[in-house]
Image (cartoon, rainbow, N blue to C red; front, top):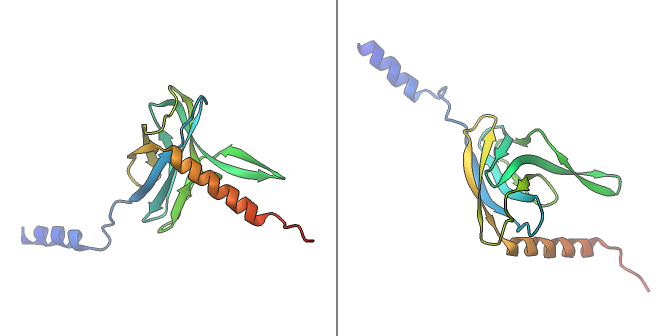
Length: 159
C-alpha cells in the first residue's frame, strides 16, 4: 500500500505531468453590422503552448468562418482559412486587415452595446466561450488610426 501511495505522489509531483493547454483571450469585440448580412469578430489570442484556433460557432448567425486578408497584386482580398496558428507565448491578434472571425448570415444586426456569444474550438486547449462586445467607438478609432498611417506613408510633394 505504501508503494502505491508513493507512486501516486510521485506522479502528481512529476514535471512529466503537463498542465492542460490554455489559450488566454483578450479584448473580444465586433463592430456594428448596420444593415449588412454578415459581421466580423476580433480579439487577441495568447497560447501558453503551440496551438491553433480550428473553428468557431455562434447562435447569432448561420455560420462562423476563420478568415484572413491576402494581398493579390494591388488588391487585398479576404480568404477563408482552415485554422489560425497560435505559436507558444505569442499574442495573435484577430484584427481588421488580418485574421478575423466572419459571422455569416446574421439573424439580426449587431448593434452598439450588444454582446455576441461565440464558442472557440482549439486544437489542444479546451473550447472556450467568449462574448464579443459590439463597440462602434473601437471601429471609429481603428479607422482614424488607419487613415493616419496611410497619410504618413503617402509621398510628399516637393516644391
